[in-house]
Amino acid sequence: MPANAPELIALLDRLTAATPAASATPTNAAAPANAAAGKPSAPVAVIGSMNADYTVVTERLPRPGETVTAGPLRVLPGGKSGNQAASAARLGADVRMFGAVGSDANADFLLGELGKAGVDTCNVLRAQGASGTTVITVDAHGENTIVYSPGSNALVSADYVVSRRDALAGARVLGLCLESPIDTVTAAARLCHDAGVTVLLNNSPFVPAHDLPADLVAATDILLVNEHEMAMMLDVEEPANGRWIAFDWQEALAGMAALGFPRAIVTLGAEGSVVLDADSGVASHIDPVTVDAVDTTGCGDAFMGTVLAGLAAGFDLRDAVRLASAVSAYAATGQGAQASYGSADRIRDWLVAR
Image (cartoon, rainbow, N blue to C red; front, top):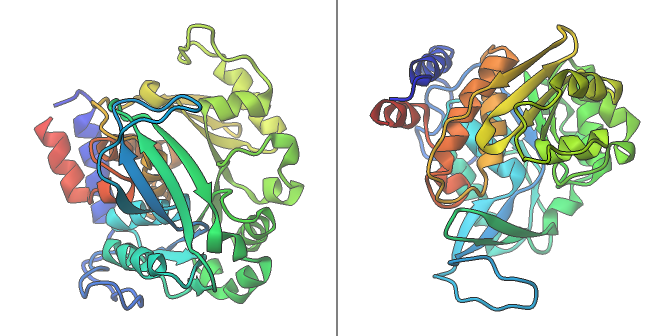
């Protein structure tokens, strides 16, 4: 058992303890009868993308202009926001999904898979045309390339956000990424922030700091980025040796605060993550949970979904990130995004068995 396993198991136990013994089944008709059993009372809202992931595995990723042979094509549920919602729901969070699917077969597939995870999809729109899709290639080491086609995700408007005002404002935390139109993301952030909902923004797909709307920055309570995105936002050089532990994290804390993000999470891959808190002036390094990765697709979304679940259950940010390190590591041991996510019980058993 890893040295930090007892602490992680205790966090999982706290998350479970924050869950009432029973609650109502999600109103999504595709959900099984027991899908919402044991959900926390404070809801998580996630607004954004749902995609069908067309995934193949190859020995290595192709170079530009090169064709390589892959294994069988798999169609898996994905989309950053859908992934984040599924991850939080599998851990026991009461999750409401907002966004749009198309009029194709992938729409029923995506809603059905979210329902199996226990996500409430009653607020999801049905639009004419194709649902969102991605084409993913995964190599033998778990690295991947991803090409994204927004489809119905691009049709989610600021007016839609306003039409779901009450459902959004009733959450404790809101999860956002940038696979949806930026005006829609900004409208959701402002509405929820003004209602006292904690807004967690994942700056992915990446947008430079100077291109982020001022209203979105002002309405964001916590920013989530990886180390490369942070370096681009701050316009700083990455460590020449690739090691981030010795980076000047106090400088990063001050830089992110100057951009309008007093609280931020920076993920560092195999080196863990850092929580930046300008209010306390502390930059906290969070240890990683190391695994032999099978597929890293969706691991970042599992991380964010866990942070959302933790915050909804009353965790402080550092503890939510500690738990996210374990949940995202578990996700890397399986294929696909949502297909690789585990419940609190399954992840606890995995930690004990390591």
